[in-house]
Length: 386
Image 1 (cartoon, rainbow, N blue to C red):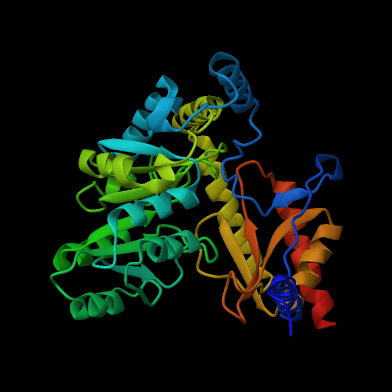
Image 2: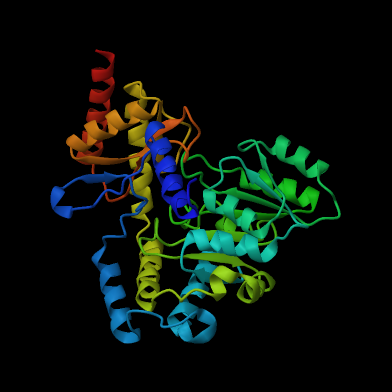
């Protein structure tokens, strides 16, 4: 008879074997700047992560306030620089207040855990980010998933739900694997008719979309239309962390009840300083967004000419859906040999049969880099056809 102590190694080995069999075994790429690979896999949409002004601001913040915050926000880790950053983020998104979190994952967990319980009904887009799905599970809230961007299906689910229970609709703003955007106006109108609150995670829209880089929600939809807005700082803004923006009652509630906020050491002050500099650049150097959107248009035009299988994305996320795990890995390895790093995304991150190259564009790319990417993608296609 197998002892209890032997059950864990067997369990781990079985899971690893199945993941290998499915062709979905993940490995962490060790980044070596000397290797000279052009990155088309990250989320540094405005090219700010490597901007020396952010690095200097972070270093100066660390020199002034220390390398770490020393404690959680509610103990002694909330510095004046955090307060300044929260106000800037509230101003950017047109909300009364904002609250910093250490990561976007923790922000989504914190909101759903603090607001929802088993008496709450949560409705989520089928392609939402994993952190939104996990947040509902953490809250033990009954959760239904509506068809992707399907407002009719959402309305049907809301109609069938008990009308004496609070309802929360949650959606990505830009969907991280497909690159398409939610119909924020349609979601807001549906929620208004049904008496539900709307939560939007605009992680991939902030800094990229909107007239002022305020995202696909931002100032276009006020806090009455979208009461809960989540944004991240480690993508277009090039630093790290996340925030929730909304009215005073929401932010005060999160401070009191969001466990991922209460029981986590605050963001390092130097990171807050770097983010403030990123916000200055976002405001002053609008040509970065213009440059990025020109890249998107150029890439889509040329990729369509080559017959590559594009999705409907008009954002920096440009997936090429190849379907088969092995095919995706062949293309990714061929691109790596050409000096290009792209994301090879397979199940369970996307549904089976939807494996893809997740190509992301940045204002830091230049025309020769885009040409090299398109030439290599065309070479993959031609090699496969021969």
